[in-house]
Amino acid sequence: MTLCFVLMQTKAGFVEKVVKKLNEIPEVKETHPVTGGIDIIIKVEGKDVETIAKTILARIHSIEGVDRTETHIVVPL
Image (tube, rainbow, N blue to C red; front, side, top):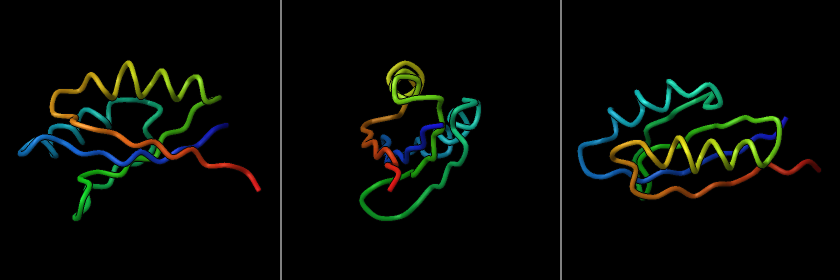
């Protein structure tokens, strides 16, 4: 299983709507609205990096109000 954290910026006024849509995606395991330079931190799990990439590019980027994402894949040590 591959795990990543995605830092998201949304358009003004869209945080709540984006969180609701994110929670409908099975690969999204956690959503956390936050303060600061980003608006939402999400935890995404998939069987591999390709699955995570498809989830982010096809499903998350298509949500109305998503402005920018930054993906951080967890690496095993």
